[in-house]
Image (cartoon, rainbow, N blue to C red; front, top):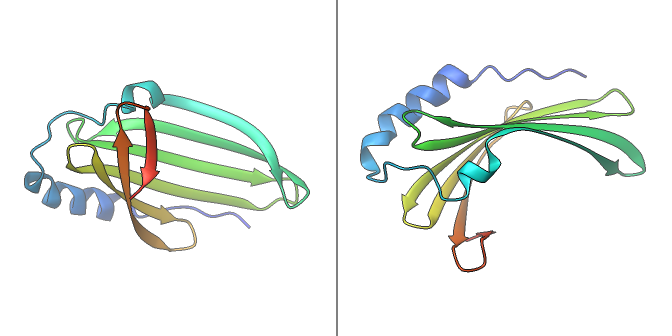
Length: 120
């Protein structure tokens, strides 16, 4: 099973339209530590998997974007795309899009003192 995400132009258009509603002109404070390509391995239901994630700043550095790809030992693959947009200082809305056509909106909050992100 190979999944390809083809939503990028639509997502970019929606975020460009929404961008003027947000006044924060800087990326989330945790973003600089995440930028770049990350790889890892793990186990899911007894099978090995490989995970890669690429973090970039998009649309005048106002949005943090994460591209994720998972490959499992049984040949299954999974892809997802996330955009983090600031809503208020320390609060973010995360738009999750995956290769199965699912979209979720999640709320997250950044705690500067502990340097942790949690779902709001």
